[in-house]
Image 1: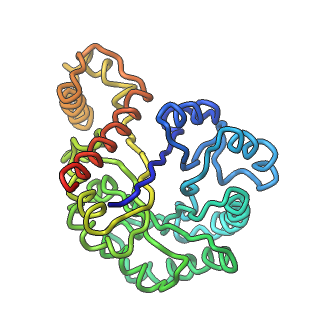
Image 2: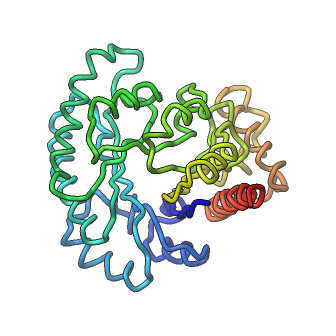
Image 3: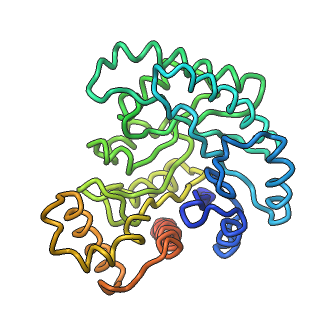
Length: 315
């Protein structure tokens, strides 16, 4: 069997590091994926600032980084000024990796015009990705490409194309089922296509309406994926919680009260239906408030339950 380690984007609950640490400890875990730390994006810290203000608190709590959830590459493909700025930020992130013994930095393959000329985009994407790779050469840091909406690598085919073209041990793939679903991709098929090249997983599920839902309530196919990872592939890497269901916590009661007007805004009506579906699945009353911490805890328990079910079935 595998030894999966659970991490998370704990800034979905609070931007304060102390709150993030408290929830990690409450779960009995020891890893996080930093994105916003004390109200500031991780990529906006210098290594010196991080060493002085953040690392001592992590060390005192025994918290480690599974990966750094950076925004590197989440810029326009032809925005050269933003690219140069990100090269400098990446240099600092590599130093932060060294300070924390972190192996991975999450990144993206640039925003492009959807439906545009991907053949034209490709050489520029590769050129700039190689520029990012230059910043990690001579270290053991690995860049993790995450599939994401509205970037070049938004489909499994283009993710695999990038992986093959880069052909570099410091360029690997992260897998996000929800992001694929939101791009109209069948997530289980994407997993089958990419599983030999993926080294890191985000746990985020998505409904047929392309709205994030707690794990197991969407089209992510998580039980089948985890069965393959645990039983057949003996995966011993990270699963990072990223429920992205803040809209449910923030708006579900409001939508219930004003549900009569949802016909005016189709996306609002879609959200309202999904919120009711989540309520039913979780036994939540329509007017019952749900916090972001509640949702994050559902995600954690849901993942743990699936892992335990798979392990029990294959004991």
